[in-house]
Structures are given as C-alpha cells and as structure tokens.
Amino acid sequence: MFESLQERLGEIFRKLRGRGKLTEDDVNAVLREVRMALLEADVNLNVVREFTKKVKEKAVGEAVWKSLTPGQLVIKYVRDELVNLMGGDEPRLEMSQDPPTVIMMVGLHGSGKTTSSAKLARYLKSKGRHPMLVAADLHRPAAITQLQVLGKQIDVPVFAMGAQEKPLSVARAGLKAAISQGNDVVIMDTAGRLHIDQELMDELKEVRDYVKPHEVLLVVDAMTGQDAVNIAEQFNTQIGVDGIVLSKLDGDARGGAALSVRFVTGKPIKFIGVGEKTDALEIFHPDRLVSRILGMGDVLGLIEKAEVELDKEKMEEMQKKLLTQTFTLEDFLDQLQQIKKMGPIENLLGMIPGFSGMPKQAKEFVADERELTKIEAIIQSMTPSERRNPAIINAGRKRRIARGSGTVPADVNRLLKQYDASKKMMKQLTGGKGKKRMPFNLPFPL
Image 1 (cartoon, rainbow, N blue to C red):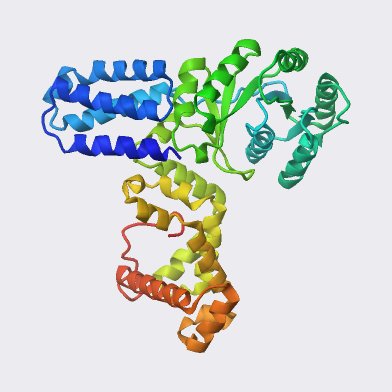
Image 2: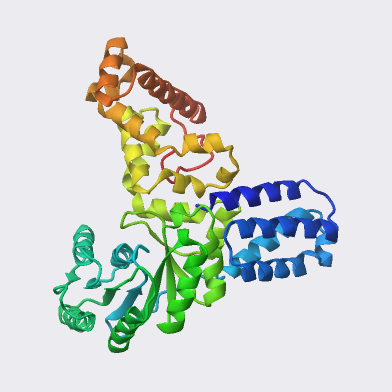
C-alpha cells in the first residue's frame, strides 16, 4: 500500500532528520522534493499546491529556527497537513434513530461495489446490526448471483427479484421486506456502468428519491488515481454523495486517490477496502493511514485487528507454553493459522513502525506469503509425535516430510533450526526456569 510514496518520502525525511539548523532555502528544497513525490503519486495538482503552501506557512516560522530538532518539526508539519488533507477526524456512518437505516451503494463497473456492499454488511453485523442486502444491480450479468453468494458466505439475507424487473420496483419491495423481517439496516447494491451516462444517473436518482437513503456511499477504485477523483466529482454533482469507500487500497502503490478525493469533493472517505475477502474492510482513520505512509506504522490498528481476529484464550495458553518451554511444532502451526486469519502478512507488517524503512529485499522476504504456506505444509506433513517431539526427526523422516509437503529436505532442516533457535531465545528471556523475565506481553503471535 502506497509503496512508491513511502519510499520517496522516507528518503526525503531520512536526509532531513540528519540536518542541524535549517534555513528557509533548506525548507523550500525539501518541499520541492515532497511536491514531486506527491505528483508522482498521482495526487491532484491543486491538492499538492494547497498542501505545500500550508506546510511552508508553518515550516518557515520562528519555532523551526529555534527548535533543537528542526527536521523533525518539519516532518510533524507534513504529517499534520496530510491528516488534514484526508479529512482530519474519523468519519462515521449516519445511523437512523428510526430503523431501518438505508445505505445506497453507487459506483461504476469494476470498482468493487457489490463486494463492498457485502463487506459493509459483514462489518455492520459484527457491530450487532441486522443488515439486509438488496440486489438492485439489474444490468450487470451475474450481479444478483454474486450478491447472493456473498450473502450466504457472511450469513446475511439477500433480497432479489428477476433481472427483468425495474430497479425502483426491487428497491421498493426490498425496503418493504426489510421492515417486515425486522432488519435494521438495508444496503442497496445499485447498477453501475462502464462509464458515467445520463441513463445511469436518472435511474439512480429515481431510486434515491424513493428510498431516501440515510447514506449514499460511492465506491471508487483507489488504483485508478485521478480517474477516481473525477468519478467522485461527477457522482457527487449529479446524485449527491455522503461518503466514499476506497476499494483495492491494498494494491495502490501510489496513493493519489486517497490523498485527493477528500479535498476535491469535500466528502469524507468512510471505509477502505484492503483485500478481496469479505472481512477486508476497515474504517478510514486519516491519522493512522498517514502514519503508515510516513513509515511510522499503525500499532493501534494492529492491536484492534488482533483483538477481533485472534482467540484470546489460545494466545494466553501460547504465552504460558513459551514461558515454560513446552512450545511444540503443533503450537507453532496453530500460531501460523491464527496469523493468517488477520489478513495478508504484508498488510500486517506495514502496521509495524519502521517496516517501510527496511531494505526492499528484506521486506519482500519477510512478507512472502509463500514462506508461511511452505512452513504450514511441512508441519502438516509430520506425524503428531514428530510435531510434539521434533528431536526424533532423522534423515529418513526429513525426506518423507519433504515429499509429503512438496518441498526439499533443506527446507525441513531450515524450519527445525528456526524452531530450535526460537526455543533457545525463549529460554534466555525466561531465565531457563520458566520464570517470567520478558519485558513485554505478546498481544499476538510472533
């Protein structure tokens, strides 16, 4: 996520941190580099101009010249303005006091609108709501079937009629069904197009005027950069948008849409899509995203994700085993499976402060999902007795395990060495007698 922008800004700020006093020319030179980095990231030109103007107003002040760490102060100003650029405060969904709350999802084909509708339904369900999905996209082939499949996966009811029906008829009947069944949120997946046209807009206006949605959420593909901003402007002008869902943000190496759309449209980004699965939807926290862009991580986001996804009792049991050196390869396998529940490993590592500053080769190795899959396959190819007591694994057993896991004996050897090294490290941390000398508690598996 934002890899190219992270690298460029990281390089600029590393130079800046090493400087002592800064002159106005120094600040101007830094801002020129920041401006180029933002333009390369496909950020809107007007946004870049306004951003650099505001940073310069702060950065050439007396506070910078008197500061003992002027470089860090300039970085702080850049961070603060990036947060302001993306909306500042965390936006909230408007939920009606008189249910059902109606949320209308709009967007173009390929933006991830239908998937985002299901993701939102899952998110609201996890918060104690009882959502219903309404399949009002009658133009795209298989859109209804796709929503029904997703609804079944997340155990959320989907209201659908035939593709020959009018969108307004489906919206009307869906709203009536939700009221009669006691659903307190109705999420309408409306029709998209390959491009914006008047027929699409008229259809959406007709549905909007009837259902009177509490929220109109526009789904835009973050990877389209400035096109996402232009699409948002047009939808907002003609339909009226209350918030934006940026889909496919995990694949956006530049970040132009995320850094421009709030400023250009005046509408907040409310959710971001960070993966293909139905649980890959996050509330948009401008300050946390900026911290990740600047390589400062997102520890709060990581802890929240761990609290939601990980089994607390299993984690406590795992810590006890680590402290008493009774941690086996069976436990290690369970640990890997717990980690995988939290999402793509690269996304998780991106939340750790300093990860973006690692050498590229090191980042690619650490974040390589294939390594986790390989380790999982090796352990699963072992017998229960081998997992509990790896010391019995001789050369013949290693060859058998390698054949069963599609690897080579060297891979099995590497895993066993890593396991032994981990046990030795834990022995040192615990004093060798199971006494807790660790200066921290593990909030999630390492």
